[in-house]
Length: 320
Image 1: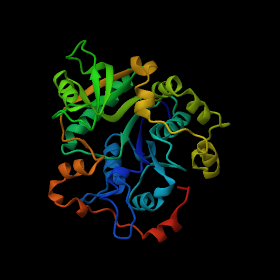
Image 2: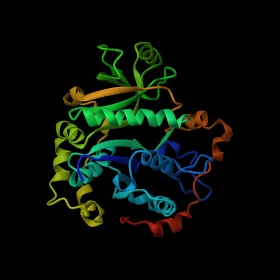
Image 3: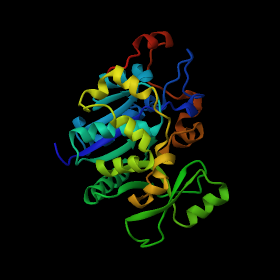
């Protein structure tokens, strides 16, 4: 394999901010990527299906958590999750992205990689998919930059991160990134909206080498720790003992705050404006209520059927 398009699906987050609405009568909290919100498919399955419109399952890498085994195993029974990599513990989004990135580079050093979080809801799926295809196309043509999908905002949202594109060449589909702003105050959000800033979606595409270069610049210690292992083999990431040893001393790092926003990485980033498509990051109960008004009471969310807590513990494993 050489120079193919791959996808990384990020599905190892704990989703603690939805704990109040995702806990059943037995006290079991379903991680948000496995919630269905009254629909036939979970957020994770919807994300996998989205990736498969462009990329075959054998080139999709899904990063999951060992402690979520009852849920992702059930998802796996219902349909392919691509190549499953299991994190022994949550060490933040930087490690959660670096592990599958190295897995891909081992097999296809010239790969172009699309990164998809698994907690997004989209009303106009066709429009969103068109933006993803454009993003991937731009990444294949430009080996030196990582392309960030910036969503056209529909208001001065204060709970999202914002991307501020360069004022140069404002009609261009791809623009350099001037700044990032995390969860601005209301007046600052209004100013960002007025100047054409975009909501940060954490969806990105780039050559595997370009994304890897961001890690090398911003988090060299973390990168060296992952690469210090001898002879990265295709099955390495499926070896629970070696992975536990690797993760034992891994510091918690956030890819957005610690890598993308690092001064050394700014010049390697571009952003593409995606037209409004009803996109939302389902990170809070309030966003869930806005995205699914027909659910009525938030407590009425419909998670996938899950085993009782005691039974779930018996199923936990580090293997895929």
